Image 1 (cartoon, one colour):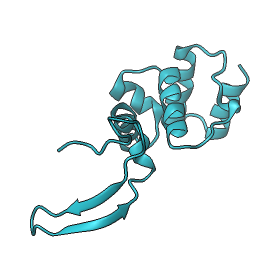
Image 2 (cartoon, helix red, strand yellow):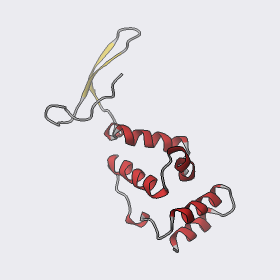
Image 3 (cartoon, one colour):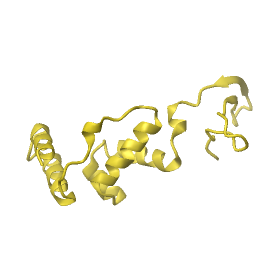
Length: 126
């Protein structure tokens, strides 16, 4: 089954869903249906969001599962947030930490060696 496109392939206009159909009982419902915010995401952004939920938002787990660095994951999350129509704050800019140092802090946090407050302090002061 194909995903619903967000824009018209001919003119680029917004697509409106006007008919729903049940394959089991052959019932059709007609009207104007909202496709929701998540229809704005590209397939790659949607896969990222699924991984984010599956990993409970823990970038340390996502780094392993997706084989991506923290800065790349952070950038992808920012793209998803913006695609959903929300603004991101400039205070989330990555610090001067190396990927290894950031990884160590996040691993210590995930393992319960340091608190969230300590992790935030360590991530912000460098």
